[in-house]
Image (tube, rainbow over the protein chains, first blue to last red):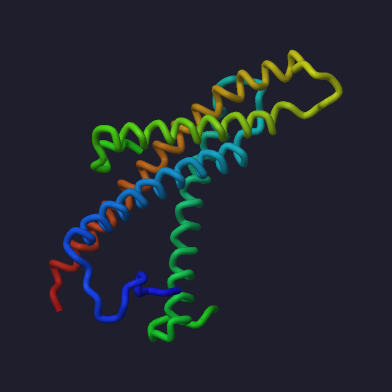
Length: 100
Length: 94
């Protein structure tokens, strides 16, 4: 992965460019949060809601959704951690633990 | 999932909300079709399928709300943890 963001070596970003980049990054982060939410709803609905004899969400289904959300977030964190580790190892930087 | 809470105001916030609505709707339609419409021996939806779709729609919307609350709780817990760790760091300088 190229961490130089496409700039020539020794090149500095102008203030204007920096601001623009910050705005774009923020927008990306919002979109990412939103997409995560939408995927969570999709996934947890699919896994937990299977009974359509009632229009109310059953208590067991409510618990399932709670666990599904928590597990998905924990899963995300774990994947992020390992991915970052692998990235660091590939770039030849010290500090990446060998895969267990 | 409140855009105002995250610092996005005005048209940007509205665009954010509309996009979420559109995507959720798409997900709802796809999910409920998958769960409720299983037989293809006739062109009309059966009574059972109609009822299922009605209930499915309601349950999906409830689920979306529950997930939103769950994420909010998780976010708050994360903030608390971070604050606690910061305080620990401040109390015991090395």
